Image 1 (cartoon, one colour):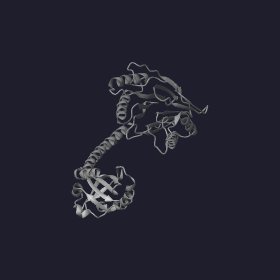
Image 2 (cartoon, helix red, strand yellow):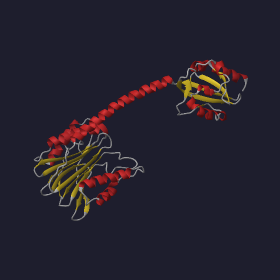
Image 3 (tube, one colour):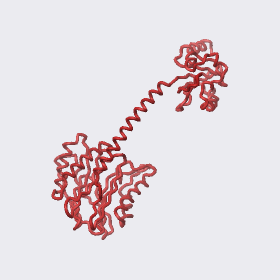
Length: 379
């Protein structure tokens, strides 16, 4: 290095905004600037001849010694211990957070350390983190409250009707869910079953589902036709929804004496039915438009007979669209295979068995979407 270069380094040391400590390859301090003196509380004469570890807390000295033995082989300027929590040690014993840049000066067999005290930055970061934690706790409390409100909107009890068995498994992916179900004994010998799914997720979907469930319960009664219930709710949803949320839904009316069901499918997953006489699982393929798209949409009602030993299964898309780490979906084929394995079991065992199969499929991850499965079986 020529004299001009040496003079430039000397000028930089005096005028640098950084604290500078220069050592030889063995880590013995040779030069410190006034910023380093102010930062660490030592005079330059006190530091010269000591190893640089005097400025490092005891807990980090061993690693520091190992690290600096590699410094002389790298001539470029770089950050020391990137990603690590580096700390300096003042003369009075106070530790403080630092960032360090290193440069090997091979012409003088020296290591130049550029040191920044980042105490204020850390304080600001901690303040922001504390603020975030406070906000997060508030949001967590709000989510827990929203979850409680949503659970309170679900049926408290599953109907117990001679000759029939019902079961539901409702599993939100988060604190709140966009899925909804209901079982309402609208009049003697009739049960109305509802399953629905809002196209959005999280809190907005949950709030909208609470709105929809309230509308449905007010409009469902044993004397209302299913088509009229769906049409009136669709109009209200189209008028009231400012976020263009769509809902898929099936409203089913079950005659518990004859086994006849009437249903309106508004764009929802087609239910599966098991026929015990044929030992066969099939789909009810009839469907209509989703709710919330068109206030003038028309809807059709369809009928089906549930015979003794048969069951009907309703579900949301979180079942078939559950995916694993290989980005494979649970899918319709596996779903029906699992259902077939449980087809002779009680409804409670069926819904729990399907959910268990989904969890095994997605493991080690957990299902990422809300899951609802509902079964009505005639005994």
